[in-house]
Image 1: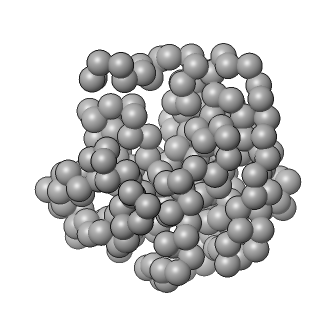
Image 2: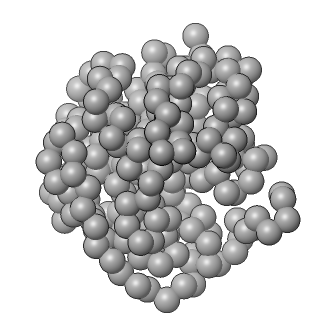
Length: 213
């Protein structure tokens, strides 16, 4: 892991399992084609100050992009859900699907559950990664993946979850272009997950990743 990159065991970092940072709750609003969502976030959780730029780009792009058709009853997933901006947007957009909001961070999971309840979204299952039934296959994955966990750990994470795409499924990932978006795209394509750039905006790439055929 590069020097000065926080360890995944760092109790102050957003990808620690039990962050020790003192609680500092904040509220923010996500406005999309399916209405307005009001969320809380907290210290020790990704995007502790509100909606981050990468997630904002992903949600804006996906609001205009039809994406692969998703059948009612399908399973969807947000990897690294944080306080739930992506997961709640998915749940509102696809009310007849089940959305898995996945995060290693206990505080993030608790807040995501609160936010789902607050916004009346009952089709969200908030889980630690190891709690997700490995037999479930996802029609779509939307994620702002945790790039700062380090290249090796990020590759392990993506290999695990991309393998859970259903036949014909698609992942949409937002990645900072200065933090390796293009090389990550090439790496996923090299693993037989055809990857293309769906959009480029405000220093971020939105990557469309197809399931292995």
